[in-house]
Length: 183
Image (cartoon, rainbow, N blue to C red; front, side, top):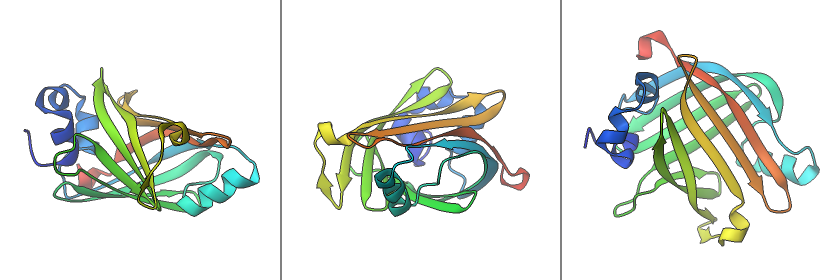
């Protein structure tokens, strides 16, 4: 493997090396990374969706929100702190021995993703969901479309989460650029 870093390890050498440099910089092994950008955030406006977003620390829908990201890495564990306009969203990414999945813990939810290279993009494919440690059946997982790659020379991301009954919990899309002293 290229390193013990989370994304290179889970993607594998060939897939990792074929990604654009800007994607490798964001998902590499640097112990600390800071980046700034913008994101358009959407989501259902009904009361249950608003409550669940607040409970999970997700941002409120609004266009062109300023976004600051800090990634702190320690071995395979990565703490991602996103600061959208008016809201802090933090998740912990890691892997588990014997599993090919990336696990992201966000509040009471832990999502398991298979990572696949799709051209210049990483496609995050949801494979499991645990809430308060209990596995959710596939019918209750909903749909998560998540991709990170390069667009117009910058790191670009897009996430769309839709849940049964609730509909679109959140969708956010935008770009980030590492701060100069972080590259």
